[in-house]
Image 1: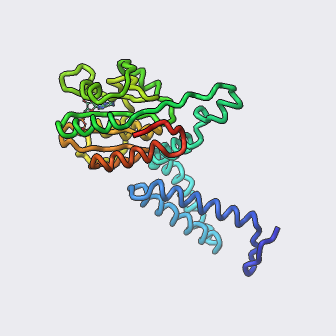
Image 2: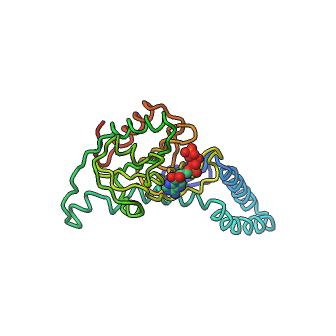
Image 3: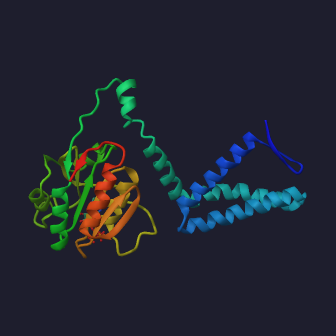
Length: 272
Ligand SMILES: Nc1ncnc2c1ncn2[C@@H]1O[C@H](COP(=O)(O)OP(=O)(O)OP(=O)(O)O)[C@@H](O)[C@H]1O
C-alpha cells in the first residue's frame, strides 16, 4: 500500500510504521542511557552506523566491508558495555508487564480470589523517619507496592506486627540486635527486620553514598517497592523509587513523593 512517493522512493504505510517504531526505540534507548558514559558510546555507534549506510549507498565497497565488520563486532561490544542498561531495560519491561501480579490474570485465568486490600498507614513510618533523622540513627525501610517481596522478607527476622513509630525506633536503635539491614513493610504490617536487600552496581552513584543507599537503589531496581534510607552519618532522608534515588529530601518532600508513588495505579493500599 503506497502512502506517498518521495522522488524515486515509494513510501508505504508499513514503512512509515517501521520508521516510527525504530525512532521510538532509539528514543527510548537514548532516554535509558542519557547522562551516562554509555550515552556517548551509543551516539558514537549510531554515527558509525549512519556512515556505513552512506558509504554503502555510494557504492564504496572496501569501506563498506570494513565498517560492516566493525559494526558486527561492535554489536557484541555494545552488549558488554550496556550490560547494566540492558538489565535495567529488561527489568523495567518485566515490571510493567508483571504477569504474576496481574489481577485480571489471577481472577479470570488462575481463578484465584482477589487479594484483600490492606491499608498501610504511612504516618507512623514518616514520624519514625523524622526521629531517626534528627537523632542520626541509620534506617532502611522498604514499603511494598505490588511486587512480591517474600524472598527478601525471608532473609530477615520475622516480626509480623502493626506498623508503629515506637516499634520502628526500637528496631533501628543502635542497641537493638535487629538494627542492621532493612525493615520490610507489607500489607499494613512490619513483616520482618534485618532483611538483606540486593545492592545496586550502578557505578555513577556518588562515593558519599555507601551500602545502605546502594541497597535502597538495588531494591528499587529489582522491585516496585518504595525504599526510605535514613543516613546515620548526615541524618539525610533518601527515597528510592523505580531505580532512581531522591536524596536530601525534607520530611514533607518525602511524604509527598512517597504517597504520590504509592497511590499510583496498582493497589490503592496506603493512606496517610
Ligand atoms: N545489602 C544490604 N541490605 C540491607 N541493609 C544493608 C545492606 N548493605 C548495607 N546495609 C545497611 O547499611 C549499613 C551500612 O551503611 P553504610 O555506612 O555502608 O551506608 P551509607 O549509605 O554510607 O549510610 P550512612 O549514611 O548511614 O552511613 C549496614 O549497617 C546495614 O544496616
